[in-house]
Length: 97
Image (cartoon, rainbow, N blue to C red; front, side, top):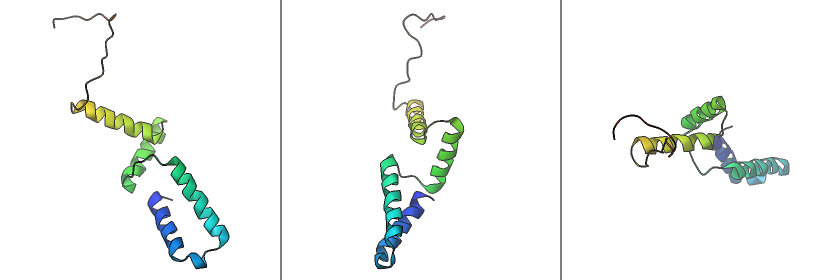
């Protein structure tokens, strides 16, 4: 279930709280707590979120790490951040500066 579907379910339960059973409310509250505990502070379009989740799983890394990498590389590529230094002081180089 996507975050947007869950939000809709929570809103619906709030609108009809008198009709909801204690067990149903308990399940909703536990899922809400789990989502809040794991929230990364980034609200994405469901399609974008799905693609990023799939790509992160394929790469074997957490989605937030993938998003951080994408943003960092975009900022470097567009000259908003300096390019990381690839050479240390002990590396040899050829050519003229």
